[in-house]
Length: 401
Image (tube, rainbow, N blue to C red):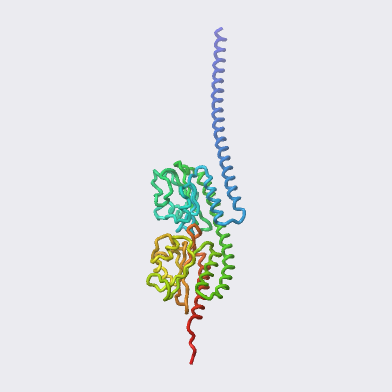
């Protein structure tokens, strides 16, 4: 009896050990299955996110299948950025290179967005924007600058982005294309750390690359159309200008042809003359075209304009000026590469300075830049020839004895 008791007890111990081992094995298997399920869930979530991001990029790229203008490209871009779930404010800044100046070409999510359109964005050397544009990333880094907590980091300063709330997070995506920095996309989120994820930064970097390419191609398309239109208009201008009989008729031709070339524009002539209205102490007579705004009219009639006119005539070099900004000295403007107004010299008889042609576009229009100077100089040269011909015809004829 004791023998069988011992046997049964041994069997019970073995069975109990096997049960415990099986139970532990089951628990381990259950934990592994849970871990695997969690990992599969993460993989599925990442796949779903990657699929959504790829669809987003494909939908964005399909908007640029055909040839579109820069304005259309900017509108599509800003609306696309505005659709991002974490973005509360989106802005597009464009310029010619990383040194600026940069202008607001699109902005959403702020009060009075039109008030910022075409305005110059401050670019202090100590600022976040300047750092993002000139910073060169290391291999494996994402070309962007993220501010996880604006309030805690105390940057950027209010001087850089006056519209930016004091709390939240910020991401700046430099827009680079073909070795040149053409601008930046500025994204603001209400939640701190919204752009902390490296995966999200990589996605936005890829989106920024698409944006850079589309803006560059749209600019190239616009430039091609502009050159073709300018060529036709300049041929007509040269032909028409030769028949002008007076300064007033030259002014009318300039106004009409410049409107065909640049759209809404104010055209004014300052010519050396001892007659009529003078500007300051300089013997310049103003032949004013139609005004397009109050600020433009104040700019043209400003006494401070005389110094710039004198410099342009003496140096025989054009100047870009912002009519709404305070008029600076000529050497302050010499290296300015764009502006909503351009002052171009007009040559008189014997290639001496004869005056200045002033073109002014509205603040919401594209500013003049270096690419426009060939056309503008051609216009000024045509006006110079017409004015010189008139001066020759008006000069008294000397009859030899």
